[in-house]
Length: 176
Ligand SMILES: [Fe+2]
Image 1 (cartoon, rainbow, N blue to C red):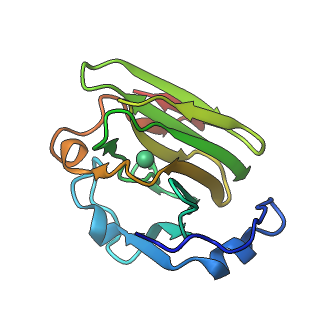
Image 2 (tube, rainbow, N blue to C red; image 1 turned 180 degrees about the vertical axis):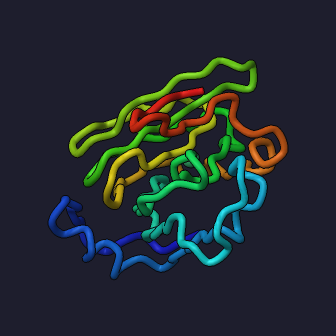
């Protein structure tokens, strides 16, 4: 279990580098870490996204995700996406910078998506897998808040993928 922060703190579009500096974990996902996720092979050394994870405050964890701009073929850079292992754990996103989208799906095949722009709060209910996509021209940065016991099931998505993909066609963002 991670150590709880000793003092309250705020995160804003201006001061988020302070949050990054205080994080105990920093994960970088490159193209070579995402074999099979995109329809076409990604540049192995291209940084797709980074995640900074802070100390958990009691039962609540906070993380900051930076998705780089770019595409693999016509498919926008995206996170791997996951279900939570705990069936009761949802997640809340707050977009700080850029333009993105979260696509979601249930194990029964229901799908949904929310556009993420600075100030948007996305509420992801328990039972919905979630993947974030950068559909803008610059970096996409967001905070995620989730229960410390949520757990991450990446395998279900790795094996079966998401039902929908987000691509650029003729300069337009399309969900296919
Ligand atoms: Fe999650």
